[in-house]
Image 1: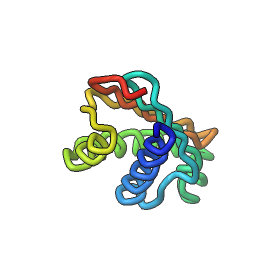
Image 2: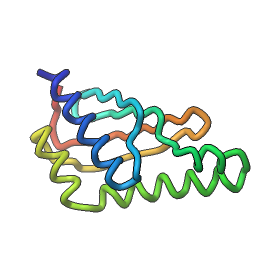
Image 3: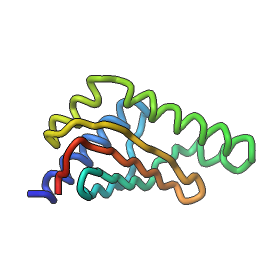
Image 4: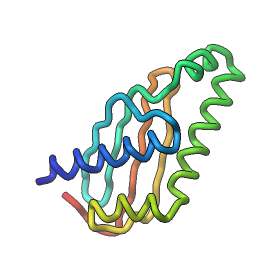
Length: 116
């Protein structure tokens, strides 16, 4: 059951990212670890962003834009409600960052209870 739930959560994260960012990650790996949901997302950057990160200013702009955009996505109560519904738990905090060089983003959702 946990594998199916992890897959459902990954698909919802991809759908949300696609809706808000314009494209979703190429690959998502989701794991439940006690009261944490950890999503590792590969293949996030657009071709324009890949070009931009070739300069220091571009790297800073893309990183700032990506991290602020993700934070704004999770400020939407409807988005959070969709995620909480799948896992039947409340999300207390969300931490997110992206490694531009590796094109890997990580998001950790801290929950009010253990899922695993």
